[in-house]
Length: 167
Image (cartoon, rainbow, N blue to C red; front, side, top):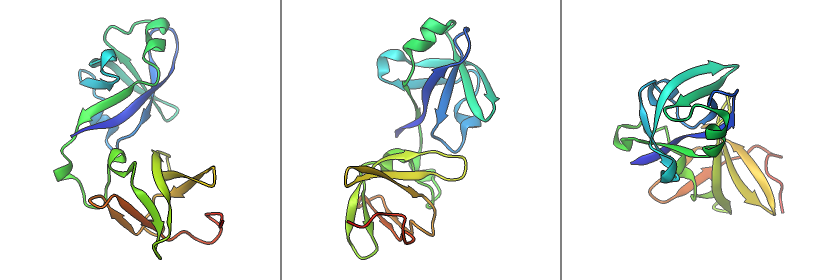
């Protein structure tokens, strides 16, 4: 299955280096020098990684054919895609694209909304959904998210008091 493993961010410097918002648990594997990676939109790829380094906790990549700031600006916000065998996944790990679009509800069955994004942070991932016109972020940890049913596209949460505004 082709899944998002990153998103190209800002240009870093003048030689075509870009920041990457990592959306995989294994960036060392996915972003090795020499790896050719698919893109979304497809017209920007595939891209072959020619350089990879970490700078202040941010992944920086360079690509074949993207050698200056102008070329790097053209690929900003392009999604990086990789073929992932989800049958080999740990049952307690979930790919972002399989969570987006899932219903999020309380343990009592009250539907709160639909997951529209999963934000990757250093501490933990955050599930994002809209409620009452506001973005709500839920830490994606077992204590708060005890049930994820990919087949039914349903995520059940038990948020601590005050995490979600009551209507």
